[in-house]
Image 1 (spheres, rainbow, N blue to C red):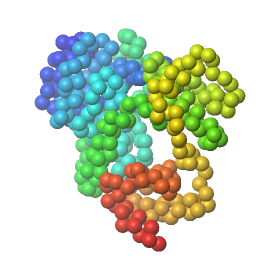
Image 2 (image 1 turned 180 degrees about the vertical axis):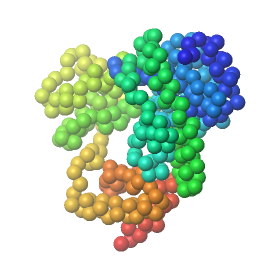
Image 3 (image 1 turned 30 degrees about the vertical axis):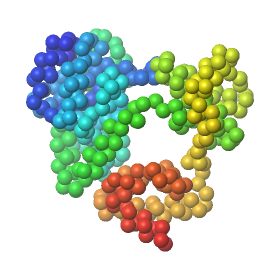
Image 4 (image 1 turned 60 degrees about the vertical axis):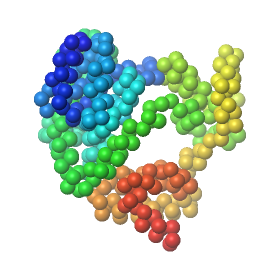
Length: 347
């Protein structure tokens, strides 16, 4: 395991000509808002090693390698890895190949695990013993380091096989487009205006309380960010709902910080939120949804795709209720759907 700046420099020098990096991370996110990055595992065709992020003083040489324009990240289920590295580096990858998304394009189950796809493609059964380990502990057991290294040892082989099949099925551009979406900075920045979407049970609240719920959620998010604590530690969803229903009252101190927050974020004073997506579909909406699902299933069959990769149930309801920002109205999804959508509107 790499634990000094010198060791890191030697490793980066050994892989300097390699542009395709298999990458995984281990982090802790139990009592903080932001993940605590602990390890970064990297594999190339000639080298595999594990970098102890908590021990390295200067991470800039690592970031320079990871965020070069010609570096391709090969990651399984990349979003949390991108996020954990982003909070330290303030940078996002230029090129990304997510093997979980790639597998889904090839009709493997959505959210397939790295262990499962490796077993399918390589015939290797990986140990899961250290999934819940506290990765901040030092020294780490040797077995835990080996477990972490296994998460990149087979990534390049998986990548090669998935890449070949994507090319055969003319889906590589689609995969890269979806991977590019994961480099959208808005995915990793706190969004106070949309924090209400994190409230469980919001649809049960009367409309008259929605504005207060949105304001409390935004304030809660700001406090979680400022204190680097989980949002539920600041205010549990159940408590937030009680405040909205006047079943409980904010403490004097909380009132002061809440009102101060609202004065600094005037856009929240008259905020309106749309929770119709949480409401059960009407009979008419169910009929429209069934029609669209049949249409999408036909297209999915033609292209050997899981229909949920084109549009899931939640996205369809948003579309039916007038949301024009849904993902199947742009990019490769719209390209294969546009004629069918046009015909559906005319019928």
